[in-house]
Amino acid sequence: MAENPSTQPARRRAPAMDPEQRRAMIVAAALPLVVEYGAAVTTAKIARAAGIGEGTIFRVFADKDALLAACLAEALRPDDAVAHLAAIELDQPLADRLTEAADVLSGHLARVGAVLGALAGAGRPERAERPAPAEARRSADREAGLAAPRAALAALFEPDRDRLRLAPERLAGTFQLLLMSTGRAGMPDPLSTGELVNLFLHGAIATTGEA
Image 1 (cartoon, rainbow, N blue to C red):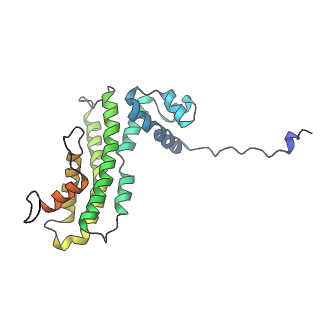
Image 2 (cartoon, rainbow, N blue to C red; image 1 turned 90 degrees about the horizontal axis):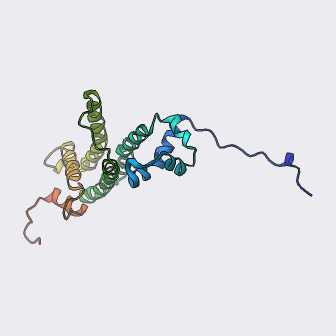
């Protein structure tokens, strides 16, 4: 005997997302596709990956350029990297702390480079004619993105402050710049994180007895 449909429990609809949640979900689905296809990725492909209709994208983004800009901004956000830096145990030797930090920040920089490279490679390089206010805002955003990881790095130096040659803040800034320069794409024979930390802490001249 067929079951009366009226006796079946009603299906619950998934809770509706607010615009910010929807934006975040779409960007999360789009980022891997941007790395793979660059600016040539279609909004239809992004919609399929997000499990939504294509029109839903344009309810929260003005156009595809706005979506790509949001993907780039998300890739530049250092929040996850900073959280990992803050979780590093401070009772480890300084070299171990910095090696762990270098692995975290190298991964973050690699992700940023992948998104930037994909967009530039697909014909979306930085625009030289960017208006001055927009360029100033971008520079401020870039510095804000560097400041939080730099502060987290300084905290890793802090337990050894009494035996450091420079203040933790200055060492953190220098170490961050070293990571950024050695992580550039195409660099021949890049240093491992262990080699980089050893060079940073002990210099280029081997002490007696070292190879």
